[in-house]
Amino acid sequence: MVLLDQLYLLYKKYIAFDSTFRTTLWSEVDLNQSRDELNQLWTEFCNLPTRLQERIWTAYFDLEGHLKKYLQLLPLLFMLNAREIRSRHWLKVMQITGCQFQLESSVFKLNDLLDISLDKYQNEISAICFSAQKELELEIKMRTIEEEWTEQVLSFEPYKDYGLVLLEKRYVEHLLEHLEDGEET
Image (cartoon, rainbow, N blue to C red):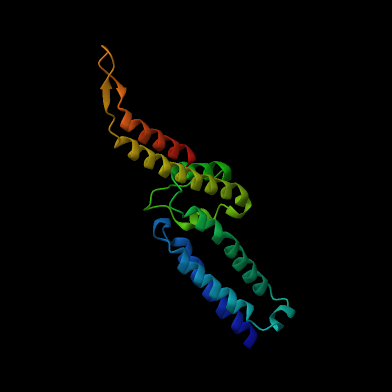
């Protein structure tokens, strides 16, 4: 009875975590806190007496399976929660999983993600998140280049009877250096 009591107390903690986690809005989730809670549950589970395993209680193995599934899903949730993930990436996730969910911040809950078995699509979702990261890096680089070139002032000097058509010599070297620096990055 003591062993069962330990198991079911931990199971109740897991159920409380699960129901709170599932009903949390995606826009308000604190994955670091959830990871800490989950790690604490896993530690408590691992510290249960080994005699529980020997008795072959279904609840023990069910709890183990639930905790392992969460531990496997958490890295995917962290990737999907990154700042570089945009609506277009969520649309790809929906396309890959074959599931539709509303992305509005007041409606989109973790339950929507947990119910679609993200772990089956781990490689595809990782690829989407990786490409989102690379896209953000490119966007930042493009904005930087655009800002640099928007601020450039081009000065021209006259050429024969054609008017102001040549770049002033003193700016040409500076512009060429700037162009070369842009090519290297």
